[in-house]
Length: 66
Image (cartoon, one colour):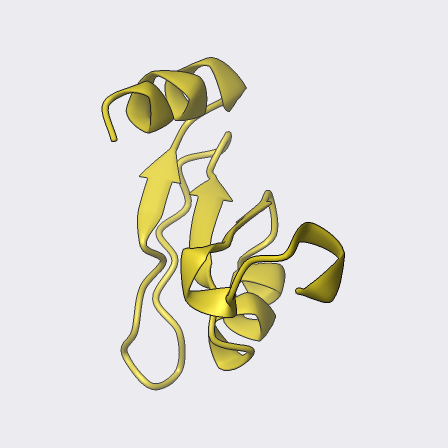
């Protein structure tokens, strides 16, 4: 996270693939899942993404509330 000068705990990784969310969480980042198809995501260890939205517009709405 040197490039953006932020600690991992302050980074939200946004992905349309559940596998990418798993990697982000393993690296210490939060994960937002763009779930366009409505397929539930639960990792093998039972963990879930930190945020799930159906599209980018909804992601922007959620982020504007933080």
